[in-house]
Image (cartoon, rainbow, N blue to C red):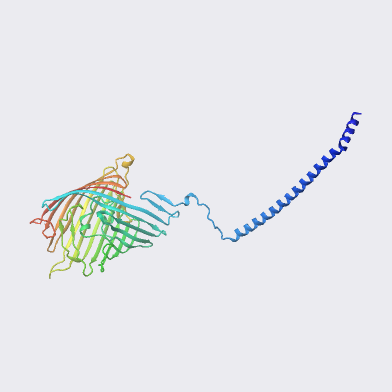
Length: 454
């Protein structure tokens, strides 16, 4: 009876007109929602079709475009390389291009006097203030440009390009290939000044064409030169020079042997050559000197050196035959000569660096740099030097000198130098020389230098 009553109540409820109307409304709303969902589904299908069509067109465009229109991101190893030792430099990732910033500063102080009271020096100077670049391009091309701003003027030093092949070909301004000490950079020479004959015989940089080759322990160079960057002459003389070296290793000893020659002449109308020298201090006066006497000359020289650990020996000697420009009938052309021998020792244990493939000394390695708490490198040196500018009736003087030096290397790029020199001068009768009535003079000099290079 209870179930029957509930069923009857439900039928009565549904049969009620108000409730029937509510059901119809719900059914209508449901139908409307279904229609909206169907429309949305059609729109989504249309959008999907358009998206697929766009992707297909993009794929076709990518296939038709050149391969790799955008480079992939480079890994860190492909970045430009920058380093600070031995000089600030940048290079390309493949090593084919490189540029180094180079320079040097030498600050000198000096004192000098002579027995004849022709000079009394107490002065300072900026001996070198150089700045330049060097590097390579396309692997086989080397270049270098360096200018010196010391002395309140600008002087071009090296300015050349060099191609490395079976032979190295150099074009531009560079040193003529003569003398061990001349081919060694002033950054690495033992004393403040090079041997007297190198300056007296006027070894210098000139514009020319050079050929060179080398092996593990030998080198050979030759060049043809005409003028220099600062000459500006309408006519220029010709210089031909060459040098060969051999640097064998014998046991623990590093040896060096070499020889060089140079021929040069002056063009018609140019000032004749002269020969002169100071007593081993750039601030000092020249006490032996000829007048302008030669329109051509020939130099030939020999050189030798040996390194035995911290001990090093170095020597050179050269001869110059001068062809007099206005010789008297029957007059003989003079032959001048000069050379040196020296001994040096690092009592802190370092040794001189030598490059047998260049035939020249290089940068030493300081074991305990000052800037790392060490004492630096200390070197003692002693040299005998001689230059003779008196021959065949020309009495321009003969100078024999003893030079003592102490070098303190704070690190590989910084050095302090102390030099004392005593010079005995004889045969200095020429008006251009500074001898007394007996042709004699004596000079003493002391020099100091603070040096840095990069």
